[in-house]
Image (cartoon, rainbow over all chains, first blue to last red):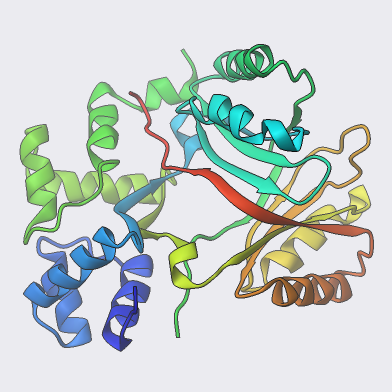
Length: 151
Length: 161
């Protein structure tokens, strides 16, 4: 999707300062100088095209009592699709990337408790037959930023 | 019962469940969600504010799909940092706008890296250039870039479901 100047302005704005006001889209329109209707239409198009995944709250899993970890596994190239399908079938697996390295499958797991997290990893071991999962929980967080600034 | 269960009421969990569906594109989106929860619009907005204040909501705004925006290369850059320097190094790297994530994680057998950064950019060369700058700024020279070749899954967590 081609984003014009106004789309870019709007996208920067809704990532950073989404108004906590009764009529937030009208407020966004006022800031940019377009009507509420146009804000809604542009946001709808960006959602439909997949540029915007979701509007609203991004939760901090730890503060909600969830446990999580980054995991990494070595998967033979011819088993990547099959193993990914097993891993991705767990709702707590939110991200999974294939990376250029001997240890090539990198995924994150979230669960309601440490025990539940351990159970998911055991199920992954069982179903894939791959025993070695490198667990790399965050010990200190220096930055999490998911805004992408557009010029 | 852990600490969070004590803090989060059933009502809170209901609100979190409703909010993770995202805000609707209507004139009064908070009102629309509040109605379903049998709350007033003001009560819902106040609750969102309190979740932001106590850190339960990390960010309130749009989540974008960066692949769609031309940030096509994504490299995880992992660093082998002496223990006593990790905090300082992590803070320096976090100060770079090109670094989107920066975490300390444990070392493992055969895996000497204990600081993880994620860099997004328009190309691999760009990501490699950023890694070089990070190395120069911190003096950490043992590092490795792991480029992503496929995004196999990316989703938002559904809490309390």
